[in-house]
Image 1 (spheres, rainbow, N blue to C red):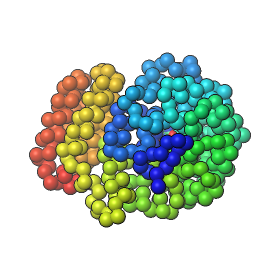
Image 2 (image 1 turned 180 degrees about the horizontal axis):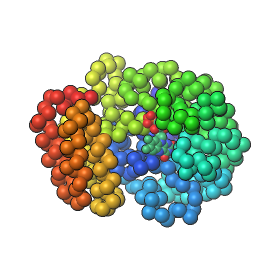
Image 3 (image 1 turned 30 degrees about the horizontal axis):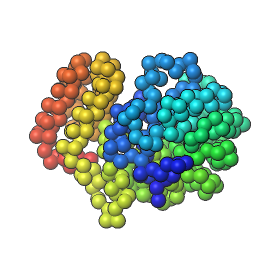
Length: 343
Ligand SMILES: Cc1cc2nc3c(=O)[nH]c(=O)nc-3n(C[C@H](O)[C@H](O)[C@H](O)COP(=O)(O)O)c2cc1C
C-alpha cells in the first residue's frame, strides 16, 4: 500500500529525506528519476527578512520538481511559520513540512528544529497555526525526543495528529545524539501504534533488507533515506525493485549498470552547473563527485585519493565535466568487473 498524504498518493514507499546542502533541485530530480516516492526540498527559514537571500532563492521549488512538491520550513514563531507556509504554498508547494528534527546549534539556540520538542505547548501553537493557514497538507519531521531520558515523540505525535498534521516522519535518534550512535525503531513503532495518521521511519536505513525489517517491525507507512543516497541516488530503484519483488533480487546494486550510473552522474553535474551557475556550481559539484567516486572506488583508497586530487583542483565547469567523463570511462575500462561488482 502506498502512502497517501492529503490528496496525494505517493508512487513508492521509499522517500528521500530532506538534507540541507544536498537535496537541491538537481538532486531531487535525479532521486525522482530513480523512483523516490517523495523528494522534499531543503529546509527554508521562515524568517521573511531572508526570503530574498541568494541561499533561500536557490532553495525554492523549481519547475523540474516532481509532484507532490514538499517544502520544509523551520522556525519558532507560530505567526511567522504560518506566513512562511502561505508564502511557499503560493510558490507552488503541495505539502508543507515542519522541521522539528534539525539538531544544528544555529537552529536550536533559537528554539527551532528539534529544540521545539522541549516545548509541547509551543509545538501545538505552531502546528495548529500552520495547518489553519494553508489548504494543503502539513507534515512534521521530528526526532524521538530531546535526550534519551526525554523521549516524548509519542506526546508530540498526538499533539500533531490533533492539530491536523497529515503525516509524521521520525528520525530514530534524539536531538542529543545528533548523528552519533544508532537510530532505534522501537519508539517509532510505539508512535505508529498510538496515532492513526501515516508515519514514516527514518535513520540508518542502508539496504533493502533493513527496509523490509523496519517496515515489518514498525508497521510504518513509508521510509525515508538520507545519507545512504549520497553518491548513489540510484539506490531508490534497488530498494523499490527488492521491496516490490516476490522473488527477491539478492545483489541489489548489480541491477543498475555502470553505464546508467555514468550517464546519471554526468547529467547530475551538468544540472548542478546550470542551477547554481558555473562558478558556484563547480564548487558544489565537488562534494557530489567526491561521494560518487567514493561509492565507485572507495575500496581502492589510493586511486580514490588520486582521482579526487586531480578533479578537485579544476575550477572551470566544462573542464570539470570533461575530466569527470574521461575518468569515469577510464575507470570502467581499468576496473572492469571489479567495479561492476563493487557494492
Ligand atoms: C547534510 C544533512 C542535512 C540535513 N538537513 C536536514 C534538513 O534540512 N531537514 C531535516 O528535517 N533533516 C535534515 N537532515 C536529517 C535527515 O533528513 C535524516 O533525518 C538523517 O540524516 C537520518 O537519516 P539517514 O540515516 O538516512 O541519513 C539532514 C541530514 C544531513 C546528513
